[in-house]
Amino acid sequence: MAEYKLLLPSMGEGVMEATIISWMVNEGDVVKEDDSVVEIATDKVDSDVPTPVSGKIVKILKQKDEVAKIGEAIAILEIAGEGEAVAAQPQEAKSHQEVQSEIPAPAAADIQELEKPLSTATPTFSGDLYLSPLVKNIAQQENISETELQSIKGSGLEGRITKEDILAYVKNRGTAPAAAPVQPQKTAAAPAPAAVPVPVSEGDEIIQMDRVRKIIADAMVNSKRTAPHVTSFIETDVTNVVKWRAKNKGLFEKREGERLTFMPIFVRAVVKAIQDFPMINVSVDGDKIIKKKNINIGMATALPDGNLIVPVIKNADQLSLSGLAKAINDLAYRARNKKLRPEDTQGATYTISNVGSFGNLMGTPIIPQPQVAILAIGAIVKKPAILETPDGDVIAIRNLMFMSHSYDHRVVDGSLGGMMLKHVHDYLENWDLNTEI
Image (cartoon, rainbow, N blue to C red; front, side, top):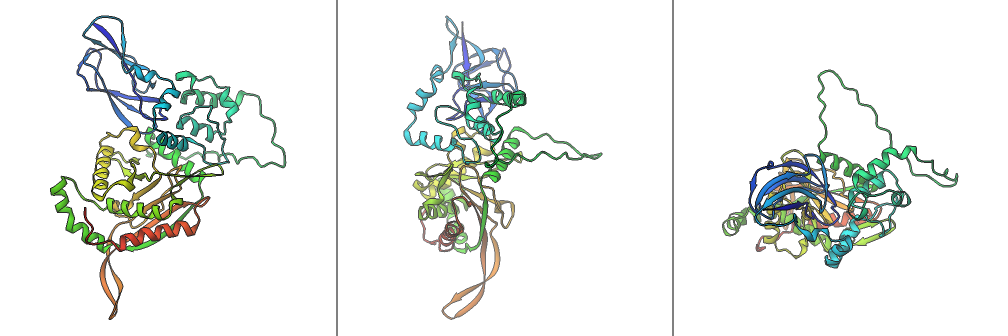
């Protein structure tokens, strides 16, 4: 018999480590090829890791809540054959430069852009120092300069700085020599406000945030700190949309075996509006604006545990209505069943949040960084409305819906943010009842 090392596989660009959530097998269990053996969590998404070979679990090397690095052995299997221990997925041991060279140029560029710092108020890092998004976020929040980062000895692959390395540095940072005082004429960055102790009364229940909720909390605070939010509102008559869906949903489900929701229609309208106003499809890097080539629509999705995740419809402008419906249904199903891959949550350039699915009329969503805008769609409600006809104004029962558009006022002024919203409104209000799907 031979031993086989099961390595933690690549989880997508920018993801260098994962936390073991739980093992689905025990030492001594026999597994078959492609059986899921362990559930892991990254700062992007939770997922299962299958074994590429059949064999017996001899030893589990990484226990629950321990962190494993990409390419690190997490278990040893006993497999048929003879010889030395064989490492699984040997190709994962490639250098960062080799991996990057195999990625198509546009995708690599998108990832580099997503990982760049977003504000001149936080430290900027050169391309010579590779940092994962999580480590970079911690460095920016703690105002750690690139010079300081270069002094940290990384314990990751090829000496990269891991989350544990930078947190240990932050913990011991106070014992380091004080930095030179800031010159009076220069304005120092405002320190983060100190946390105010919260009184706990008898009978109160203390609930520890889970890992995903902590990530969401940090991201929301970072976005509010980074981008000055402005929100515009509009009320839209979607009666034609409602009629069209009622007419086509049965035929579509019979033909494709898929549900036809309102979301593909909303995405189609947003994509058209982005094409009209491409400067809404941008990111900010210091004093530079990065205009995105691809239109990748994030779709905020509530999970059964109460948390939120945003799977991404890649190249939404290249999909038909039918293609959008299938992509949306697939991503929503996999999100709610913890089947998303890390790449499914990366690369969004604009996000839609359907608060109407909870019966809400409107909301003021927070922009997911590094995007500069997000659209919230409210519930569709029947209301009396005034219609203009050749014979004069009349009151009719119509299907109305509020939309709210939050945008980053650093680069999106009220004219651009408002006109973008108005175009989404126009595309929905003038929806062609003869549109094919």
